[in-house]
Amino acid sequence: MNANPFAANPLFSYLLRLADDNLVHAQQLGALVSWMPELEEDIAVANLCLDHLGQARNLLAYAAEVEGAGRDEDALAMLRDERQFLNAVLVEQPNGDFGQTIARQFLLDAYQVPLYEALVASGDAQLAAIADKAAKEARYHLRYSTQWVVRLGDGTEESHRRMQAGIDALWRYSADLFAADDVEDALAGIAADVAPLRTRFDATVQAVLAEATLALPADPYQRLGGRVGNHTELLGHILPEMQSLYRAHIGAQW
Amino acid sequence: MTVTTGQEAFDTLIAAKQKIEPRDWMPEEYRRTMIRQIAQHAHSEVIGQQPEGNWITRAPSLRRKAILVAKVQDEAGHGLYLYSACETLGVARDELNELLHNGRQKYSSIFNYPTLSWADMGAIGWLVDGAAITNQVALTRTSYGPYARAMIRICKEESFHQRQGYEIMLTLARGTEAQKDMAQDALDRWWWPSLAMFGPPDDQSPHTEQSMRWGIKVETNDQLRQRFVDMTVPQAQFLGLEIPDPELAWNEERGHYDFGDIDWEDFWEVVKGNGPCNRDRIAHKVKAWEDGAWVREAALAHAAKRSAAAEPTANTVNAANTVNAANKELS
Ligand SMILES: [Fe+2]
Ligand SMILES: [Fe+2]
Image 1 (cartoon, each protein chain N blue to C red):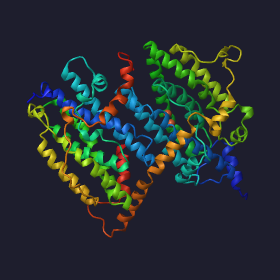
Image 2 (image 1 turned 60 degrees about the vertical axis):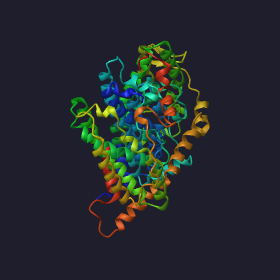
Image 3 (image 1 turned 30 degrees about the vertical axis):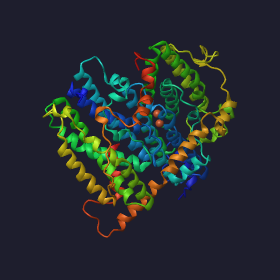
Image 4 (image 1 turned 90 degrees about the horizontal axis):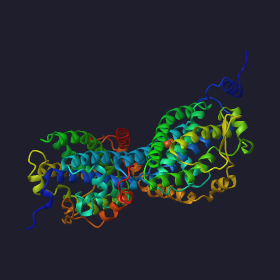
């Protein structure tokens, strides 16, 4: 078996895993501004985008510092290729309709709330400080996405069908959020222990879907791989758009 | 004892340069003019999300991306305040939306031009927000109270946008050759449309006189345009960029810059719907609205179900209220 290349610098890899979830997710949300069902939701999606982007920047800046190779947040965001991105495959799934957008947001939020709350107690002070700010944001996000899951699930027949379709489409990408390997093992006391996160995530999902009169799909298949750079084909379309201008003018200041 | 009619009370307020408030009597034509103007302004903010939103996914740094998202979000927020101001005149936001979609109400023609490079994010902030501020600072003294107050709030954010746009231009103008070219090209494309934002010349602006008499307009189109040119020319010089107008020259006698003629034929074509992006902007807006219909219906249906439920359960209060609260926290 090959050695895990990401275990060579575990803290750097761990920070990229956390950062890339937010960066790719923010990139997706950015494309939705002006496309929402109401002006209020345009404002809300811009807020979500800004929060996730802010989290990504804090984590990338710290990752760059940990790496110590002279890269900055933009070099990490704009010059890594698909196979070097370590986000969970969930966040690279399409925006879809509003039901799917909300399903993706909800699953991410249900994971990030316990994640950041656990990381507040991280032995790494800088990571703990980043998590402290992010936890507050994540709790607001979860309230927002929960309310929409419930409204759509228990709204009209059509909204119920679409919200269920969103959950059905994305559930198979949810386990990748929790995929951990020797990167996390090497960071005892610094990284969050995934087992309790998964327990809290499952409890949140179960309670909210029940209130929304929705159900989890029966199909047990889960697509993993994002944490080691083995993505779905979609990421290879998201990154070129994000990186094109930066890469066309290497060395320029913006 | 004298009986004051509504008209007399209105005239007295206008003469004293005091504000007209929603409950005051006002001439029907004043109300109609005010609705048209505020709605057009609100629509402009909302449609204005699109040209800049076009570059969110491609912003060249994460910092610039964050600034751009925040700016586009501010514009949506301006749309919200202005729709609220318009609703005080007895018209519902959904009606206004409908009038925008079917083309019976307009938005600023400036947003019918495409954003073709990153430098357009600089040029729009600098010139388009700059022109908007010039207009809107004057409008803080407009006679309709809710509109004047909305303008005060909005102007603060617009001047922030203007500085950010100028800073993008400055960074590009001090950057690589390719970046300088990008900046000059953006100035070339946005200069004339920005001047046209102030509207037709005074002698061809049929509503100006009545609007001035009612205190809706405080300064004429040509006065505002001149102020904008005088303010912007030195800024372009500082950037080392050239304004695309061979007739532009300082006029010592007038104490103002002279400038060339605006192509009004082109301007009216764009107003009529024949600009490069008119169809796309409205099609985008209508598609977003239609795609969202099931969501809005679901929100209403859900709220109705919850309020029909005899006893709300501990963890489910009125859905509309909680979502509003969540939105407030998010903003
Ligand atoms: Fe605005
Ligand atoms: Fe603005």
